[in-house]
Image (tube, rainbow, N blue to C red; front, side):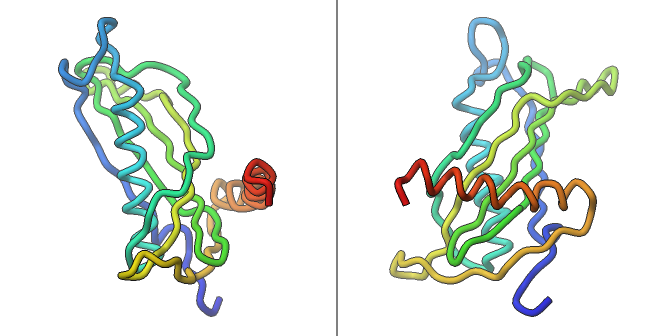
Length: 156
């Protein structure tokens, strides 16, 4: 595909250890800390796709599914799932890994919209994206509906 990149090109994985200063009185990670991690990994995935600077335009959804506790390894995976003219939708999946047992569970799923910008902060066009795996195809195909819902929320 001309001026299009596979979703896998933007795939970014980060790991963090859940430490006591990052947790609440239940010894589970603060939601705001998870949001900061999501914003960072989504930005990196977007920069890899856009091959340039980006800004966060919106957190379209954040679903906290289960807690991450002190001592857990938090693994975030982000991938650009669809694009507009200058915007990129990024899917971020967060899971915990218990290093002692190997047990993994999804803790958070989120969709973030980022916009590619130039050195003056003005939006610039981005390449299209295309899926390769079944999971990517599902995310990609549902991206049109999510985009339409975003536009409706913003009154466009």
